[in-house]
Image (cartoon, rainbow, N blue to C red; front, side, top):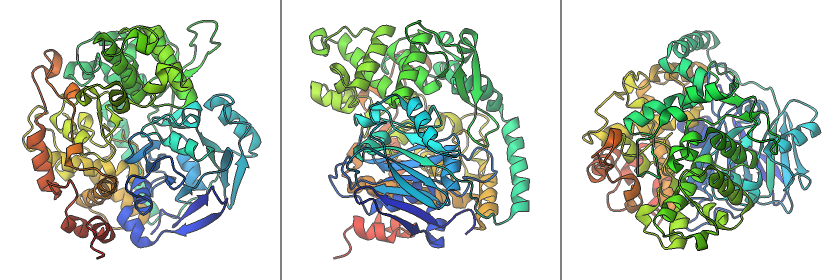
Length: 619
């Protein structure tokens, strides 16, 4: 198998020992790489009722066969483990130069177990591994400072993936940050690093894997670049980043407002053009990306006291979470909230949803001024920034908000149907009522309410050509009929991005992805084979969640994000979860009583060991 080094690095922080783990051709063909290979590695560590913050919970940084190749939009790495926030399968991806340099070390990934006695960072370069003291970095400065200090200690070009105060304080939705403001932002992988006293993973290397068919791949790369240049969204991403979608999202009812109770708001105050008009903005791109959807605000000076000039610009999810979800339309406050979250390493989505939940409860007199120690009114920009700081510092009501909405509801005695999450992961800024299939994808997806694992807003939309060869075609988004089968395909297809690895915004159609995989690895692959890879990945992660206690009862959309609204693009629409779930379970061969993939399905996908374990067939 070309496209791989065929080995991973394992580091035990408790003992300080390192070793190489061989990855067979058979496992590369079956699990491909990225988050799917990570799930294969992590499965054997999973125990019922395990504490995600225990030293036994590994964290895996993994690349795929596309990483490091010249295929465009492939500088992605998956960071995986059992989520400190949900207690279930967790994964996040990041871009920048870190993925390319991670693979450049000569390893396809790094598996880290145990816990260091004191803060450390790991430095992996070509042929060398060092575990270095990080006591001088712990609690000292933000993630930008940390990256600068570590780079000053490393005598070569390197990328630093680190945690800030969020990870150090074990905040449930702490990020891993790299290449300045790039974030692996969901599921709390930063808290998992913090629990291991691991401040950073530093990688440096330029090694390249062999390509099976270089001439053919060169042709595919040329076609891929033409596809990206001609895609309708490419120019919009360049001009406005992901926030180009805000206007359309509001019209579709896809952008939630006032904690999922509204869908109409003044989008023009916070959409992409408004940011470009107010700020002097620039672009940045991950390695090998011709688009550059990242934003930089070059002259951000909200007040003289902050002494901040250049910051990372917020993308759509962040603008939605700190904007309409909190009924806040102060752009400076949204930018500052994003900067605080980036600087200290916490997820903007979960933080924004948690703050909006506090505002919702305050309005209903469930959370009082006495309880909160402050007023928490809708749309108050100063309150939002104060709460972000309190979350980071674990002060007052901020300590509760840092646990996420599921735990907030439990500790405050609130009806669980008021907590906007699935399996402990807060909803993103794509409303479940906007696309019937998206609601189903949230319910059954491997990491909970994840918009990337069921990208209906792009795949089930007019003009989509990415999944045409797989039968993923535009349908009536408001009709629940046959959404179970469509969702099964979309979930399987979306698994590929974090496995191969490939940016979620890539417009490459399935047949081009299959050809690129063949040219890179030498493994023959038809477009429909991609769905088999994805289905295997989806079922493996589901089995991990089943081991951790997930049943069909957990495939649930709470009332707050499901009950029909009376306004906007989704007025009168409620996802028909029972109908869609039954169809999904049938076409996916999942057991309706237990919520597990059927034994026969696991065997069919080559997951024999998982079937034996999940169904206790050893006896």
